[in-house]
Amino acid sequence: MHVLRAKTVAESHAETTRMARRLFVSPPAQRMVLPILAFALMESFLLVYPALDGVRVAWGALAIALPAYISGYATVPLAERLGGRMYFRRSFLLVFVSLIMVGAIELAVVVALTSYSIFGAPTYAFRIDRAVVLGYGAVLWIRAVILTATSNSKYVRTLPAASLHPVLGLIGLAIFARYGVWDVVMAVAVYALFFLSAVAYTEIAKRPLLRSFGADGL
Image (cartoon, rainbow, N blue to C red; front, top):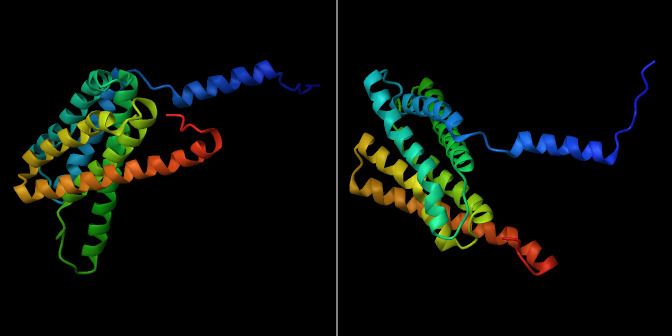
């Protein structure tokens, strides 16, 4: 007969540590190369949809993946030069998560437009590349919040590293989609709104700590 034995404190602590390591330790940067490329291809396909143009998909994937790779590598020295702390593992994982966010927003827009067109509405009257701008704005929000908490708590010093991927992504998108000046201005305005909301969110999140402990923990 098997008798269940309660775990000791040391055993429970060791198991919790192993679980936390699996959940929160970033994978090696080189393991993120192919997943980033895969998501870039998917997002490029959605960007040119409903057209089925392999050449355009390839160029679109390059316009999405290249800024992601550059950002994954360059965020580390940029953050450290400005007094923060960053690691390549975390940087490439952050880029991958950012592309998931962009892809999710893009997919939601494509599904909505497809569903809308079924009922006789104009097919894809809304430009899908604008959804990508919205996605990159969300990326800026995520990067600003995360880097403020883990790299540098000063917003001015966090902004260059946080905005690196969205800015490079916008450059790639502008070249691919042939943006005009007005499109770029609107994208910058979207970025500004997302960054300001990230600052507001961080300040609101710090208030309970300030009231309880007199410090914000950042």
